[in-house]
Length: 112
Length: 115
Image 1: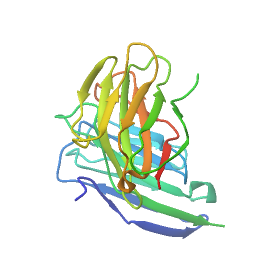
Image 2: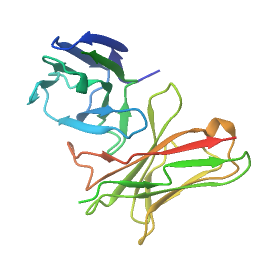
Image 3: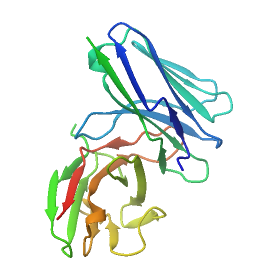
Image 4: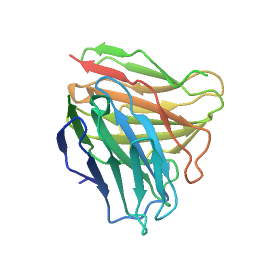
């Protein structure tokens, strides 16, 4: 059983469309990180959110941390084929500093 | 500024042999973490180390697995008497600390195949 549940598991969209990936838990986290992983490579950090209710924008990507620090979302505007990849959310609990607990990931495919 | 380095990138071992995976953290980072990604599964925490200390090994299998981060040199994840179920991608990450919001940066991983 995953502590962090990601949805959907798989998302296929056309270039130019928008998409949202969700990361939910019943646990509270001190911080939450989003990564993107390409096949055969390690996860690449996209963003870290720390404050409940926080919203961070990185170009076409918008990240939100829930007020209760139990959930997060990643929204991509006008997706491009280069956004294709496995998106992973990972949380750090107050009880286990340094230990990232990952969701199972959302595979995003953006076709031209 | 080089990122996290891992070697080898690919490692093939026969059942019963030993596997040694190495990780050099980013410059200035003194905290190292090991994670395992089994086929069709998510990343799972294994162990968290600082120089010469194991801080959290709650994710390490009780037998055959050990990790160290010596005063000098890379961190080593050692798997003795490997079995086919050990086949996975092993990732190392590093950070400068663990206060809330401190980010972990991952290496490219070592793909272990046990024949």
